[in-house]
Amino acid sequence: MSSVPTSFRQQLLGTIPRLRRYARSLLVDASVADDLVQTALERALSHWHQFDQRRDILVWVISIAHNAHMDNLRRGGRLSIVDPQELQAEQDLRGSDPGADVGLRMDLVAALQRLPVEQREPLLLVSVEELSYAECAEVLRIPIGTVMSRISRGRVALRALLDGRSPAPAAQPLRRVV
Amino acid sequence: MSGPFSTPDERDDALSAWLDGELPPERRAQVEAWLHEHPEEAARVRLWAADRDALRARLAPGATEPVPDRLQQLVWQHAPEAAPPWWQGRGQWAAALAVFVLGGLAGAGATWRLQPARPVLAQAGGSGNSSWVQRAALAHSVYVPEQRHPVEVAVAGKTAEESRAQEDHLSRWLTRRLNVPVKLFDLREQGYELVGGRLLPDGAGAGPGAQLMYQASGGSTRVTVYLRKPDEAAPTAFRYERDGDVGLFYWVEAGTGYALAGSLPREQLLALAEAIYRQQPAAASAPK
Image 1 (cartoon, chains in turn green, brown):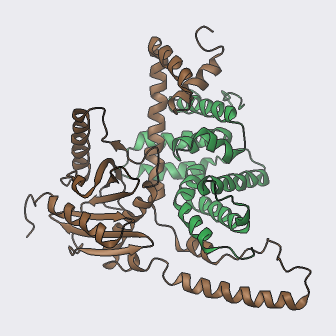
Image 2: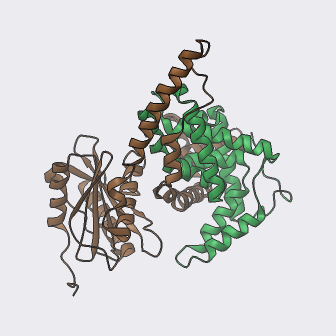
Image 3: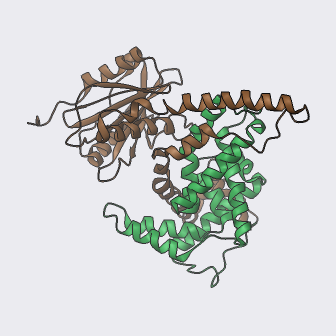
């Protein structure tokens, strides 16, 4: 019980590529994202005996990452992690890549980061990680109906941002998160 | 609000859940019928679908990056301190003994583990070669377990004709994007059906790579073929590497780099590699 089984470590290793992808989608900044990944892995290793082998380990680990992220936001006293300078840097970086579909991708990343985290997380989990609503509900520990409405609000808000219809949340607040 | 929805929010929730395939059959049929009569709403849903695809295209390739050593070592070496030791309250001797025994075991485990972490792929034919073979192995491990979206373009159609059209489309698309002729190999004789393919980023400075996925007929075993335009210096030898339970055959021939990956015994994988080798397109212009 005290020592982490090798099989569990192997399972956990297998989740890292997708865990990192999720953290990066959520946080943009790669080093901040890797810090989150590290925290999630450490917590998973410390609580390995709580993992029910009948469950999907990826869902379990992403759920740990979600909790860690929420802890960070609470600690920082921020509801949203949008840092305009970071965003600009990211945009410059993308903009300098001659091969990239510059306009669309840049706008997409910027718009995504402006969604409230309550919408961004389920939207990413379902769109990019291809989790079901049920798995998403498990990760976020909210009812499936809430997952459904947060995703649809997220889609409406993202589209509005991409259309340039709601440039600043202050000027035209996004709809309340259910 | 008329129709099957009582509020605009309820409507949006249903449309969005429909897009994600999350509605029960009856409700789905209802929503589809409604969308049929409301083309402007259908257009809105299509935009959401385009946004979802763009998000996926932009962010999904992130999972093919190699895992940094730092994180691998963290997982192998981490010895949790937070968990209460089971010997607590059993006296000093028991505690001392447990620390000694467990420490020894953990230490031995860590050393043994760290050495062969990624032995073969790390040394596969020099730096230029290893990285793309690694990407092929990673792309294999990322997409093979996918249940719902194993490939970007699936070839299965309702009719043979439809499947053929999909295959043509896939082959043309990948050929255009990779700038090398992409042929869809027929592995049915070896018992594998083509599932489809996807485009993948292939490292800095390189064009994209492609992954073709095959599944055992009537089974769940999948193998993938990674294709790319090779670097000038890439060695052409036919090579075999093993990483955990994933085996890889890779080679460069007629201006295309190939890597076949699968969790199969070496002999079985070799039979597939040979079938691919026999079918690969001949050199359009033999490089001198």
